[in-house]
Amino acid sequence: MEDLKRMAVFAAVVQHGSMSGAARALGMSTSAVSQQVRKLESDGGVTLLHRSTRKLALTEAGQRYHARCAAMWAAAEQARAELAASRDEPSGELRLSATVGFARHIAPALGELLAAHPALRLRLLVDDSPIDLINARIDLAVRFGRLSDSTWAARRLCGMQWYLAASPQWLAQHGAPRDPDALLTHSWLGFAREGGGLLLDLRSPAGEPRALRVEPRIASNNQLSIQQMCEAGLGLALVGSMDAHEALQAGRLVRLLPEWSFGTLDIWAVTPQRDAQPAKVRQSIAALHAYLRQVPGISD
Image 1 (cartoon, helix red, strand yellow):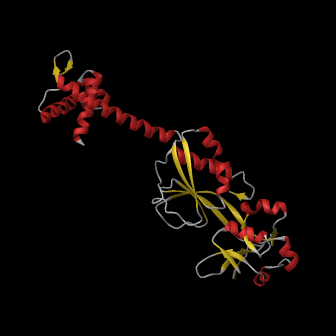
Image 2 (cartoon, one colour):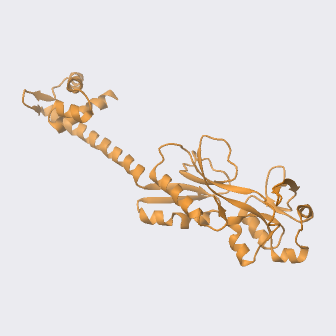
Image 3 (tube, one colour):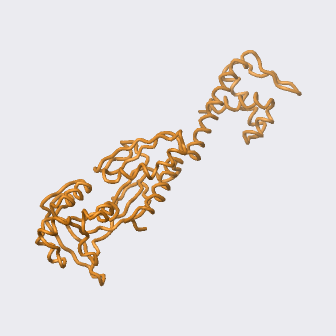
C-alpha cells in the first residue's frame, strides 16, 4: 500500500511540475513529498527525476515509470468519480425484493424514476418467503408486519388496516356475523402458520381489546391467494385494506363488522446497510413512499 501511495505522489509531482505544487494538491508538506519520491528511487535503484533549482525533468526511466503511475492515478480518480456518481445519481442495477401481492405496485411506484434515469436497471425478485438480503445481494426489500431484530436497516413506509371480508355469495348462503362471537361458527381462510390457528386481535368500537382464535379450513402462505379464494366464496378472511380496495369497490367483497378494528399491517423498506445508501436505493425508497401515500386503503 505504501508503494501505491508513493506512486500517486510521484504522478502528482509530474502533473504539477514541482514538489511544492504536488504538496499543495495533496495536502502534504514539500519535504514529505520529496521524501516519498526519494524512497521510490532508492527502492527501485534508479533516478526518476533530474532536479535543479528551477525545474524538475523526468529521466528516461522516470518517463516509463510515470506512464504506469499516471494510469494508476487516472484509474483511482475514475473510481472516485463513479462512487460519487452512484451516491448522487441513480445508476447500476437495483435488486429489489417484494411479495407476490405487492409486485403489481412496483411499476407505478418506480416507473418515473426508471424513465428519468436510463442508467438505472431493475431486477425484481418476487417471493413471499423471506429472502436473505446479503446472500441474494438485495439492495432493497419491501416487507410487511412485525420485523425480526437484525442488523438490517428498516424504514416504515406506511400501514394498512386489516378488514374482515366475505363475498356476497358467501353471505347470501351463510349470513353475516352480527358480533365477534359469531365468527367462531364460520368457515375461515387464513395464512398458514406453524401450529395452525389464526389469532384475531380485535378492538371494540369503544377501544376494548378482544382476542379470538379460529381454525382456518383453507390455509395458504400467500395473502393474494387468500383474498382470491375469499372472493370466490370459500369463507371469511382478513384482507388488507390496500389489497382489497378494488374488490370492495366492485362488490366482489363485503366488509364485515366495520365498527370493530382487526389491527394494522405496517409496510417497511428494508436495506442490508444503514449508512451511505447509494442514490438508487435512497430515491427508490422515496418513490415508494410517495406512491403508497396516494394508494387507496393506505394510512400513514
